[in-house]
Image (cartoon, rainbow, N blue to C red; front, side, top):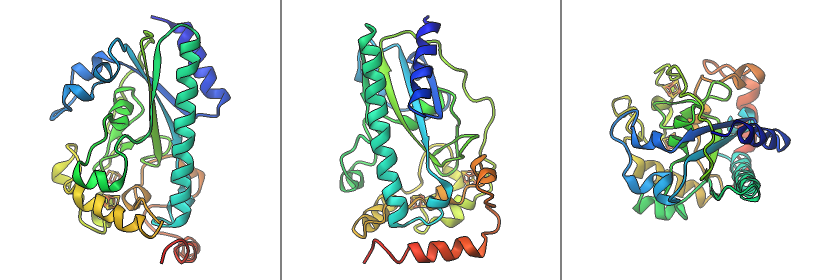
Length: 261
Ligand code: SF4
Ligand code: SF4
């Protein structure tokens, strides 16, 4: 195990202003924490044979921006965060390669387009499961990873490495309160408490909604992430999940007039 290397990776993340970083070892994919689990082809050691560790980073989605979702505002933030995640994980993989540890980045999306997702609603690697196994948070009914810092308002990307880096513990408690705000807010009925934590009840309906919004340049939908009460970011931005401030509703109405036809 390489504690010094882990400290160096964390320091690199600090320099890049990455607020969330944790490590999982690849054995965790072989010991599913719940069922059903993914097929072996999706394991990091299948995608990159010889892999021993997965470094997962997370960047927040600013709460006041996703409060306007679906909107051009959230659409642009989503694209920006995705670009940063790809760049940061590429740079972290390069950092490890330069120190003699063969490593690869995994882009934040691995499916091509929403149209592809409509036919095959999975990516070749799940950052959500990697984030869970690295101890960044736990699955919510809305099928995302809830974190104590940002609830579900965070996006993840991963570096797969042959380096043996000490793993972080799994997150010790279930963060989802089962308030069902996400279920009741979904505009296409894609979520159901009964399917938690196995996945979206109707992923095709969610993907179809995203495709529709994409044609208006206002995808992704994000409503089930917007309404979730979990996350310290609510306190930071002084936002209640129970009752929306009329000023925030007015801001959403204004922003939603733009970016779509
Ligand atoms: S992103 Fe939108 S359509 Fe998809 S599950 Fe969440 S609320 Fe429903
Ligand atoms: S909105 Fe409520 S039920 Fe849905 S993920 Fe968040 S805490 Fe869980």
